[in-house]
Amino acid sequence: MSTVLSVKHLTKEYPKFTLEDISFSMEEGRIMGLIGRNGAGKTTTIKSILNLIHTTSGEITYFGMDLASQEQTIKQQIGYAGGAVDYYKKKKIGQIVQVTKTFYTQWDDEAYRKYMELFELDEDKTPSELSEGMKVKLNLVMSLSHGAKLLILDEPTSGLDPVSRDELLDVFKALAERGVAILFSTHITSDLDKCADDITYIRKGKLQFSGSMQEYIEHSRAEGAGENLEEIMLHYEKENFHEKLAQ
Amino acid sequence: MKNLLSKEIRLAASPLAWLFLVFGLMALIPRYPILVCAFFICFGVFQSFQSGRENNDILYTVLLPVRKTDAVKAKYAFTVLIQMLGFGIAAVATGVRMVLLGEATPYVTNPMMNANQAFLAYMLLIFALFNVVFLGGFFKTAYKFGKPFVLFLIVSFLGVGVGEVLHHIPGLTFLNASAPLTDPVMWGILVAAAAVYVVATMVSCKVAMKRFALVDM
Image (cartoon, rainbow over all chains, first blue to last red; front, side, top):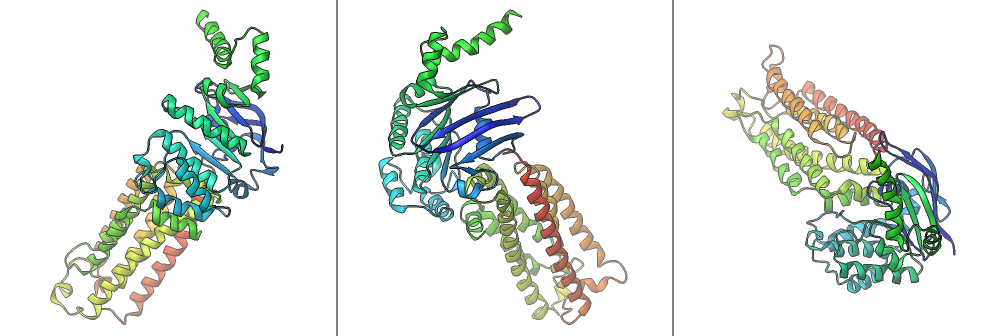
């Protein structure tokens, strides 16, 4: 398996928050959950690896290419979807797609039609007419139609009902089987129990763990931190909370 | 850049940007501060920025496989396109007014600004103000447009005021001639304003690109 994304010593300093020395890597066909409580640094990490913000230090490479110098080539091969973000709410999906496809050299109309049908999306609808789950699916269609090998998704399951969430996780698994790597941030740990191979856990801006989810759960279980991801997260996060409460 | 300009036109532009081009025809109105047409044409562009922000246009653009600074160039290209279309409409209306209606009483006795080369020059200067003050100011954050627009509103109306005052000053009354078709000074003023517009827009675009490169989304 080849490495699709490598993040080394990523640091981003804000006046009141620092994302510090984050390192992780992703292989093709793997699903990685980026977890942490609200404000831990998940979105800052995602924005950094998409070059939406300026990092203080660190090295980010995709498919062996440096993000800073080969951003355009890299963006031809990755896709992004933010849970709550939608673009051109009142334009028809077909119109948005007609414009978007002109930017991608590998755009595949056949794949586009196939995924639109699979996700039951209608070109004549506007994003404002779609449910939250359908919006995420629309972003997935756009990414998959230009042959994205890595999907970066910021809280794609938040705001979805349990059935839509479950369907979306099934989609992730099916895509991973086809070799697509998926990095998605979430604070809903049960999503990861169902589909993640790896996790990167960020706590208060620092890397707590990155690697196989199974290994992490076994290791934490041995330390008495919990039986599953939710219990483990609660254990670490509330430990700090209780310390503060006692002060 | 062609794809990005197409994206500006097909996705980001507000219909008002096109509709407000009609204000170029204000050049035909006598006894009216016709230079406000330049403000209204810019106001249509402003509406596109407003609609763009509501639709996460900048984020959509920078996530495309394009250079971040190309997003700035595309906004400038769209703005210049609208301004040149508005200028073209006003220029045709001005031509009609000067060639066919130059001796018409409402224009000859017009106490307000007449549509002539000086008027077209002022239009270009108002456009240049928009590009420097509004566009340049917007790209400091790529999000906040209230302050740069209010600033543009103030300077553009000051500009309209100056334009209306100048031709009342002794020695400058020629600026309000109703049909100065062969006056080389008037053509010179138009050419000079065009040069100012081009230079100001290019410099503003370069500055905006530098500013936007520093913005965290």
